[in-house]
Image 1: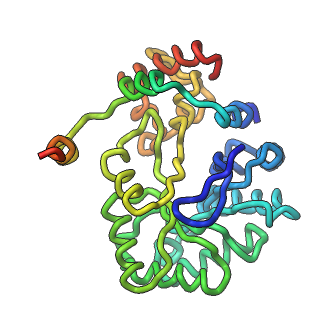
Image 2: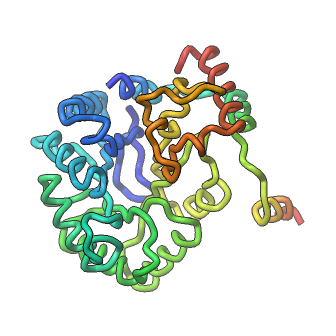
Image 3: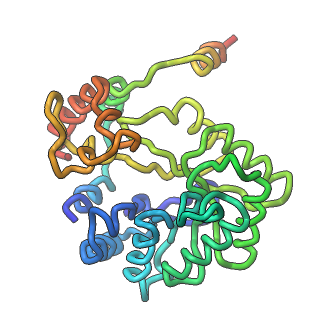
Length: 263
Length: 44
């Protein structure tokens, strides 16, 4: 397992990042801990979760699993999506970010987060407020680096500009959906990242399992599969994955799998 | 766990240039304006 620097920072991370969205959902705690343990044993150290994954349960599981080895882990989590029903239990206001960070630290059982990511744009909050709050968290020692997820090209560039202008912390990374089944970020988002040295951490590299080979052209998705159970508005919904371009891609993936002996 | 083992296998090897080209062509997204125009016009 190689290590690389994240964007143009000095932070070294393992080339594979373990995503923990399913911990506490498709994966129970026992299974999750075995996975984390195996990942660490294989030389991995980059672990990504979010407050919203199972409303805090994923973070709690990760926190328990890394007790005693916290310093060996580069721990990433996120904030922005609803963590309650109140009007301030969501978004990127100073109020929600500060409260959200405290809650995540508690659930993760640590006093600092390595990479704190904005989970998506919030049209209701000015960037200055968000970046100012995130900067305070870094100054307080609660966060080491800040990043974003699911941003467009202009959202990213505007945020970098606001940071430059005000001396706020700069977003060092972006976590976009990216796979052979979803390449739309290549038009604008990736060029924006490349231009300013923003690191890219793809989510959904297998299209939510679509590229694994267990889905077939002309057949219904296997009953207990994640894609079969995904509502239409989810990114990994069957309605989004079941298109001719993706089946053509899988044909080539299959050929290459034969040629290389890799799956 | 099985999925993790499979995924850990992604590290430490590379596809050939030719394989990458085949995958890129099969999975290609539509080439649209303004990206297409800007790319085409870079030489002018």
